[in-house]
Length: 128
Image (cartoon, rainbow, N blue to C red; front, side, top):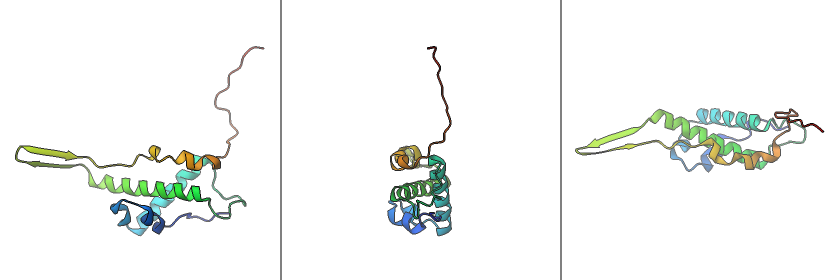
């Protein structure tokens, strides 16, 4: 049975290319990690609590690091808002760069750990 948390804030800081994530307080990174792990559990339907998982697979750990980094970066971007400056006749507006969770490619990392739910969502009948 894999014990949580699966990753540590140091793992996210070492991986991240975002300076704002590397400087994020330890407690906030722990919350981002918790959110990432819950996302993985909901996505896969697998809590990795079965006896076969003494530790969490490396692909799952990687997905958690990617997600925690994205959650941390997006949280910081929410607090910054939009930057707008004007100089004489010249002005510009810089939009913050949010990480799109759907674009992280998590399905390729987590596909083999998705548990079948055993429910039918679409059933078509035809006459024999």
